[in-house]
Figure 1 (tube, rainbow, N blue to C red):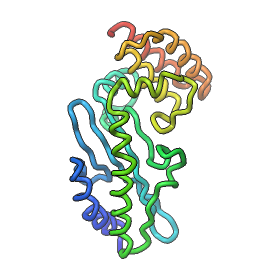
Figure 2 (cartoon, rainbow, N blue to C red):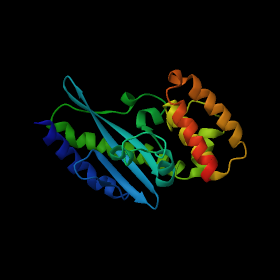
Figure 3 (cartoon, rainbow, N blue to C red):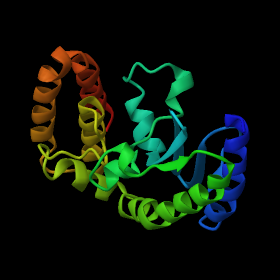
Figure 4 (cartoon, helix red, strand yellow):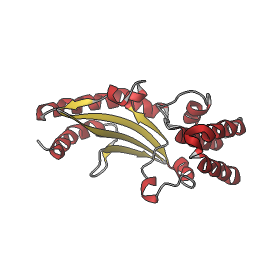
Amino acid sequence: MAKGEIKSAFYECLAPRLAEQGFNRLKSSDAFTKVDGERTFKFLLIWLNVKQGYFVCPDASIRFEGVESIFHKTSGFESKYQRGTATVGASLGAILGGTQDDCAFPIKNQAEIELAAELAAEAFNKFAMPYYNKWSTLGAIDAGLNDDPNAKVGYLRAMPWFRCSTGIIVAKLVGRKNYADLVSRYTNVMTTNNDGFYLSRFNSLVDLLNSTL
């Protein structure tokens, strides 16, 4: 059975289960989304080729249009990629405290398609939905990123540039009192991380926030 046929059969099994929560598949993609105002909740299925078939790894994310609009004013992303970024998100394995492989469903043959869809739907309801509910406000994201700027939050933002940028944007939007201290802390991170590769973009973001908000 070809990979495309396996995918189609898998999504045919999974789609009705996610539709119950208002998530619908984006046409010709591996993602299911639910739009609620300026928020988009996404459930992405990442397909990994393995020797005996495939592993399907689910990823949960939330996009806030206002946050991403600000971020992309200085991000340097090409416009065609800007619509695909999330404000927070991670693989379900990372959300559970492990790695992507810790929440993956094997499909080695046609007989395993329905079981994999059932497991994916179960993981969606058990882990992704609580994640969406917990991090569905800017206040919650601000607390998760900025209450302890030194904490590891790979379940929200793994890459330091994204962590610092998202953190400082939401801090400004919610009016966090220690905003200036966070600017200093995150600037130090950007100065040392990756030999300061993203420092200029982060500085431009801070300048933008300070001049417009």
